[in-house]
Image 1: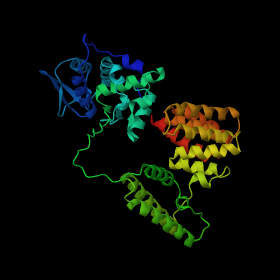
Image 2 (image 1 turned 120 degrees about the horizontal axis):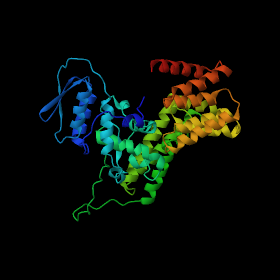
Image 3 (image 1 turned 45 degrees about the vertical axis):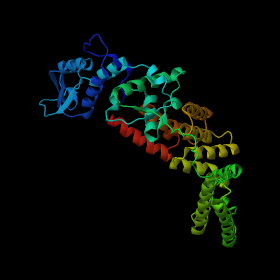
Image 4 (image 1 turned 60 degrees about the vertical axis):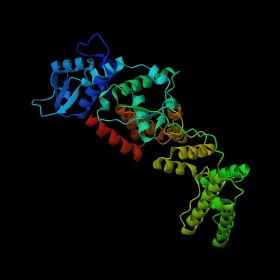
Length: 412
């Protein structure tokens, strides 16, 4: 569990009447993060550390003075006798980092990408907000720009911004500047004459490739699953011949020729999928309101929340007053990372609306408990699951989740 901000202010050490020094702060943070025994040297003094923590209040006070000293400490691994008495060194590190925090340092770096490379496993010791922890978890999967998720003009994002500034001061989070594109100079006079460019053909080929890239095998070849193999082979040969000629035609621009080659590869791949029997219809073309819900559950299990959102929306057209569909639609919207963070509040509101409807098979309360479990609110999640299983004891998903939550509560 993360420390609260009130606990981070309760420090029992005397601090010098000046601001902390960032090199000293990062050196102490690295020594603490290693979790090993050794000596922290700064100036003519050395402070022992036991498993990354100071052994006494006096040792902690000496480390606090080191945070505000100009000499950058260095850590030397060495066996140190005694037992560690953790006096919350993370509290002092966080307080020093907040003294160096300045939102203005990040305000002009909205295009930077956040590489949340946590260089130690003790991040939970810092008083990080729950939204910040969720934001860093998203950054581990894919690099996210600072300006895409943190709005500087909204009050509810200031907590995330303050935590990111403090973590950058500590050296935990790194902001990577965008790559500069090379500046292309003017063409030289001695260049060879360029091939004739057909811009209209290039744009048309690009649009065709965008359509065929996400289509199923039968749509690529313009066929249906009920057609015979001979007609499918004829369609494949006809389309392959057309795009092979476009990829070799000198009247088409180089970009158009490259796009034609990509379309040709997609046509050959589609023909191979149909002949081998591995081709599948895309969900958007094979689904109907009666089968969309089951397909949406399968997409949820596969982690494709954007596809699940489309399936549940299609099923809701047939049953607009179903609390179960309303809850699953909100759950898919909550986890759809292709949208901004406002989708989470909207998804929770949709699940609460399903709970207010007062009917269903227990899925609305189960999905609310699943979201609370992901946020670390174990007790509230267990209460929701207990209510589900009292009314619907055969709910297998709720029973499995309650066992998991109960084990985590006992562990903590």
